[in-house]
Image 1 (cartoon, rainbow, N blue to C red):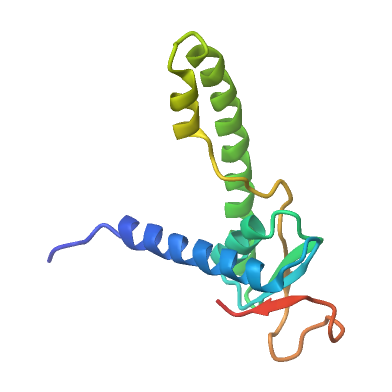
Image 2: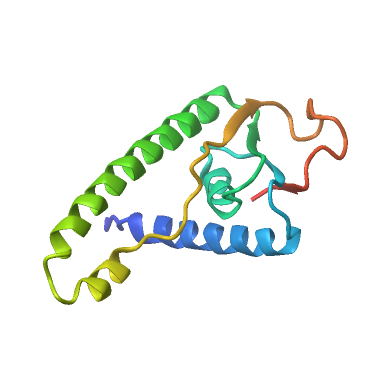
Length: 143
């Protein structure tokens, strides 16, 4: 039996979630938005929304499964620590590349997209009956 590498499919899904989240940000059209991601699972869509709404007042992922929420929090914390590591590495690389005459082109190719510095919150609950009051979010998704 041939086992396929799941990585390309995962990267495609992350790309789609990112593009959908960016489009939703454009449609909401406001800073400091409040975003609720229902049935968030391990938080892939919640993190994509958090990156797209980088200046959000809050981004909340809601799911019924405590195990999924625990994994969502773990992955979110891991990604945040990796972003911090990459940021430091990029600063060190910038110092190194400043020695080269073509540093502008090299640095532009390494520049990441703006990412949210905030961390999404995760809450346990049922999407059919949330604990949140009506109209307290600017965007509610199920991705």
